[in-house]
Image (cartoon, rainbow, N blue to C red; front, side, top):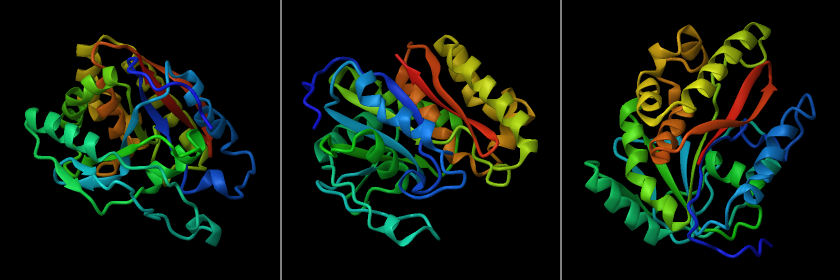
Length: 275
């Protein structure tokens, strides 16, 4: 059990890789493919300035016309992956929800011009419960899931994050859960290695820039990153990148840095931290 005192210390904002399906809880080939990613996730709590009051997790696996918030006091499980071993459909993550935080976030988003939706039926999808089960296995920190926008508009996702920045000073850990490379046809293909490496390098350079330039590049990422961007995140399927845009918006003036990179299935995947 984590006994660190909960604090209102300003939290970093994180963009993390959540792996492939329930990859951390099953056999994989090769067996050690996800070991480094799991070790990074397990190290997150010790890297924080204090125990989070709550976790606001922006998941790549929830798209909605307007920003939607999981408002249940005790969310259930949503097994939104297919074809994996039976035991992976018996995983549980009984972390409490955060309905009061959902109301607060709804107010912040409405003030920023969005029309947020409270969703009391939404359970924890695998973009949430898989990485959280590795990073915070005690499941004793309240979690609020937030959707992406179906529009996939990069600038709007940055604006979402900007509305959320004040929460970091209230001890809320903002996490964007996705994958920095997510071209399903490219995984495992050696021809993708250079592409993934080039896009990963661009991401690292971009998040380290001052806020105005960083956000401008992220808003125009598909053009600014060159061919490697769209080859890493095909058109209409960039939902695994956009949690980064929310996190970058929530970063405010804080600079970002890649804090973890590994080559998995022939491509580089990274985690990014703003503080």
